[in-house]
Image (tube, rainbow over all chains, first blue to last red; front, side):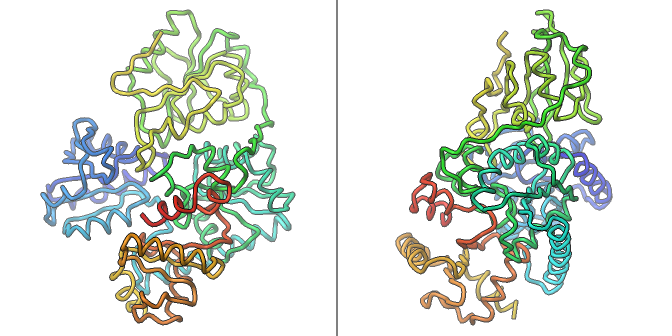
Length: 409
Length: 112
């Protein structure tokens, strides 16, 4: 979970805490954000009775002894004191499902992940959403005025991997659309950094709410000079629905689904790399860069990272943990922070990169060194496909880390 | 009026499929045939400016235009599906056009 969302979640919970009357507490949605919330609540010694989830694959799992159960279990605690906390973008759908079941307790959204949805046709809601749309139209007009004759590509979600895929196929898509110049609209500076790797110079960074409003304006106006490049956002995009019946890896989803390009289209590679200015601090070919953190992926147990660190230490390797912001390096390793466009030089100098499967792995796809991606054993969204089915990278050693996993020396 | 839409459409149907004008009548027929075969009477199929008569719930064209417009302003329900050919985002038609899936698989993904 991103830090700003974490802070929002904590603030909202603290505001609500005095109103809680000792009823049963459930979370809805077995995902990274819910597990982060579970950790937060457990640290405050708040008991969680269950994690509701519609996925049959997830029902029966446990997280820190909290069972994952089907949503209608909530009816066993169907009273006004029961609370269901939701920290996913599917709050509206989940709330609606619980109400359809007849649940009378509280359903509380702790993080506002999704400004597109509000399941109501009340005049007040329509007026509010119309105002948001009007703000989006103003932003769209400003962008188009400043970047005259440019194609406007909107990347709705703050994830490096998504931007990487979007950029990999953009030149061919622009040719198809008969546009030469493009401006990329992204929700964070680091997403803009990924676009820059592909030599994109026109980049506009918006807050998530502004970008959502801009995207809503593009949906409303059906402006053909604009394009939304994502596989499952916002709500009108249906590409992910195919995953209910067929496995299509993410790379193929972007190539064929998002952009409609031929199956054999070859992605372009990032070119705009720079060299890390402290490469001399890294022992050439005898160092390992470990990247254990990812903001939207279920984490890997510390024991596994410890095994990896101990293994490389016993072989005399210099070991770094790639950290950003207030992330803490793994015990017995040195912290390393480098700009995104210098990370390739870092891992190539070190010789080995080991990371949890995150967007950083996509960014380092073309690095010339040993690369290992570790996949927590979870299903992609609510599909029957595992994360490794969707995200495996050809140039990496792809390894699933399940409950029995031991680092092979 | 919007309450009328809510009562007549959203509460009466498991899903509503809004089909824009740019989608061919033959494709709309394929959706209709698929729904008939699956006996999905709870799914309302609407083509812009034209309600399939057998599913008409007494909602007039003007209200339906408002429904199409509203769905482009915000997601007011997760039981609405918008089908359009000329979109400014990727869609299941792209998979069909690139040969990755069949039209039958597209209908299955969309409607099941």
